Image 1 (cartoon, helix red, strand yellow):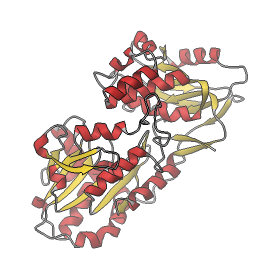
Image 2 (spheres, rainbow, N blue to C red; image 1 turned 180 degrees about the vertical axis):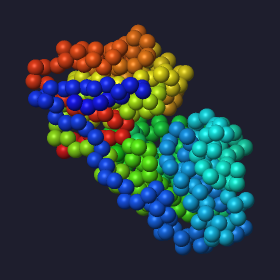
Image 3 (tube, rainbow, N blue to C red; image 1 turned 30 degrees about the vertical axis):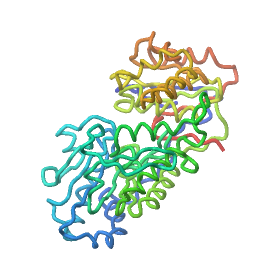
Length: 420
């Protein structure tokens, strides 16, 4: 048995012992120090680099927006303190929020992101649709145009910060992703995301563009090339635990420090399984992790790694804010994933890519969704609606063989089942 959350409510879920393979949780170890201590320790390796900064130079720090917890309210004040101790003037430091194509941040969100230095250090939001605030740097080897934030491009010294996480087609977040898509134009963002598809019509996703993989991943490679066009002095990346507190910190060369963080994250948040199961019951972890369907898709993606083809998934995702984007549901006017993919290739949208990924899984598995979304719309997306977890389980059991196997996953967005 395990408690699984849907929204704010926790539900006890029981699978008979003879059928339950495991309750899948991330094998996270305790942090090796306080959040502040971990950040300061990581920055020790960058002291020589910081010492070369000149007092008159413009220093730009890129950090993530409010949708991506990073511990920035802790590490940004510490980083600024180190810069000031090295002789950099606070008036010459600017923090740029890497919005990608997300909305601008509110004053309250800026205050939360930068912590105690709010009001002392200039903070600006990246604007992906303003040509005047963008600079063209060139094209990647696969023809992706790289247009980035002018303030970032023209900085005397650039520092990238953020968090290492799993990413369902870039392999991992963090590192190079602060440049593309973080501070890139909408055109660049769309082109980089489109690279997850194989070139041929109907051939689907590139086999290397998957969660937890960097080797041969075309999306990751595009991000690397873009970052190399405007490399930072160094990066500072954190890893957060399930409680959203800093578990580890990595600083240094933008390639090596990121890879070190990725290796740590993979060890801490991968769960080895010997075989896939007939049933997976997964929660996103409750609100706000299941605030909308786009956010909840990550848990669906990860959990699908533990499910046999044709198996049953019960997904607890309240989705109190609906889909997360006004155009997301429109993509399900296409009856099959192949049609959706074809339309996506003609008019690429990031939300359409997520819709296609969901639709493709709904065709490979039988997905029962416990949410606040209208039943008819859940069915249109290819899933089966259920009003509550107990009703979903009863329905799931009716679909399974007598000797079925099962996994329970209480925090589906932070753990990756890995076969082997």
